[in-house]
Length: 161
Image (cartoon, rainbow, N blue to C red):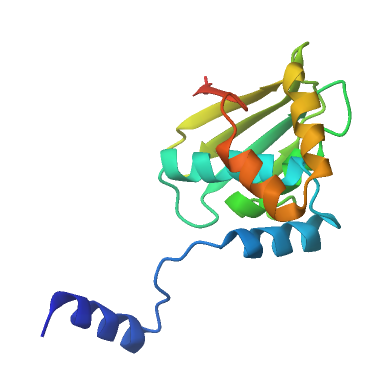
C-alpha cells in the first residue's frame, strides 16, 4: 500500500481531519460574519495572523495576541482579522486589546506569541498605509482580499522582546 493511501486510511480511522486552509471566499465569509462586513482592514489582519501562524509554527489556538490601537480610526478592525486567522479570542484570554496606544506614526501594533515556546513577533502598520488600505474599500471583497495578500510593505515585523 502506498504511504499516501496509508495516511488517508489513518486519517479516516482515527477521525482526524487533514490540514486545510480556507479559500479566499471562506475568509471573506468568515470575516463578514465575525466583523459584520468585509472591509479592507479585515484581510490585513488575516494576512498578519497567517504570517504569524506560519513563522511561529503554532498549533491551532496556539497563539496569544496583544493588539495596540493607533490614534487614527478604524484600526481596531484589523484585530478581528488577526483573531479569525489565529483563532485567538477574548473569551479564551488569548486576544487582548491593550490599554496603551501604539507608538506615534503607527496605525496598529500587534504582538503575537506562540503560547508553548514564548517566541513572538511584533507587527506594525504605519499610518502612511492608511490611505492605501482605505482605497481598497472601493473594490469588491474578493479584490480587497487579493490586494491585502499581495501588497508589498503593508506592515513591518520583527522579533518581539
